[in-house]
Length: 533
Image (tube, rainbow, N blue to C red):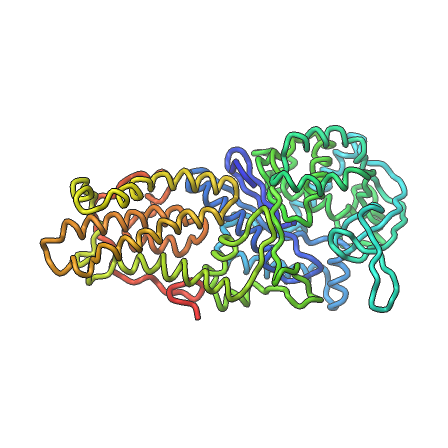
């Protein structure tokens, strides 16, 4: 299970001995968009990073499939909720498979093991006196499956001139609900909840203000809906007239994957990663449920920012929703994956632009990274197709002080990238690694190997140049594996690096002379091999 940084649905959890659990929720029956994919990729890159340190990682992802909005969306297209969920879940799975998301479990909240876990958890809450029958009256957003206080709603003037109540955070319409159901004693938990939050569990710290707004008007939470209104969900144990609230249902997925209730292990999560829209659920409801059940809390909640298009949040009404599958047909799966991880951050909103994405992929992956590989493995320069050994005397003789200094600092890149990966700062990893890749390209140009190769008297100079540039490429490729696993893997194949020598610790092991593979990179539909037009 995995430690360190990481927790919309999509979310991810890291466990202290090495387990990562991302979990993806789809909204209103829509196909996945780049926001969903970004969370899965951020989790995947971090899982891969921990594997590079030799840790065992269980990486779980999946779909939240219950609730009123799913029931409503299925009815609109004349499908049963289960068939509707099967189709949407398949789209998520296909997207994650295409983008090399290395999950080991794909959990669905309709799975029998999960249903059983949720009903068991409910019984524990009842036993511990955190569930009681009562009447709920208040605002409810079906789109967000969220109960809202007066402070969390506002009036919006519609085109018809009429006023409509909407959620302040999401902009979705809300309705007034009044019904008899089961309530959770959320207010009873508040002191312990504040104690946990005050330890600084939310990262970045600035996101805490969003949670404080919800805490100011904290009330007991309705955790069931009338089954006559919501039939698509898990029934309340012992009461066939009520359905368990979708968020209580969905959040238990982390426990289901960890073996709850009979074989719970590797708990609590060291870190969970969440999108901005569902921070409240993971920093108020989720820890409150765990406290009430007597279970340990996650040690950190990381909240990443939104993806926008032309500065606006993606929405169907605005017509700016980006379809990942369609974009990958142009950028390739590897290119699209790299752009999202290279350009996204946990701190500020990230903007998607087709032209920028294409330029970045071409400039960095094709023109710099793959071009460097092409140059060092060219038979016109590297006539014996070898990865030469390092020779200190030749290094001192043929390279300037500045060049030697830059190469000697290559081990520092490992520590730098370790820090960035631990902080989920994939964009900073990219910056640091590509600084070295650009440097190695310049170094190659400056030493004019196309001239050196013409005279055997220059072989020592040429071999030292090949070692320095190939060694830089080797270390950079190991560090890039979490971002672009397929391409980085092929580059390492071409350099003759065995699959057992690609962990972080191997970055510090200088290569002895060996043959490199002289076959070209395998050109595959989903992966970049040439300039994108």
